[in-house]
Length: 126
Image (cartoon, rainbow, N blue to C red; front, side, top):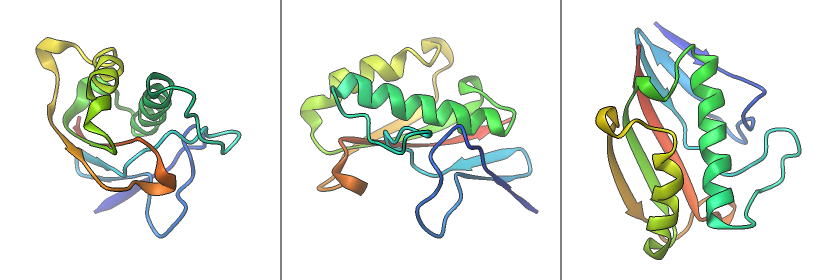
């Protein structure tokens, strides 16, 4: 049985998808971009601020499922320019304990929704 996870502390879906779906003890999140959940505006001043907003959105989705970053077992990071990898990685690293960090892949893509620079999705288990 699946449970739809929704929180107003992260951007609302803009299509036929959920912020996250929980099946048993496993949470599958949709990708988060740097939309501010209250204003609906993109936070793209710098790649660091953009990545921070993405991670804060993800933090809110995890919390809505009664989880946190320690529950994450897999992350996928989509970036529009691999030259931003170090800056994105520096922010991402602030949210995880390196000794228990999840598996991850980082992929450069041609375009992301709203032409953002970074989108992150996660799988978490409780």
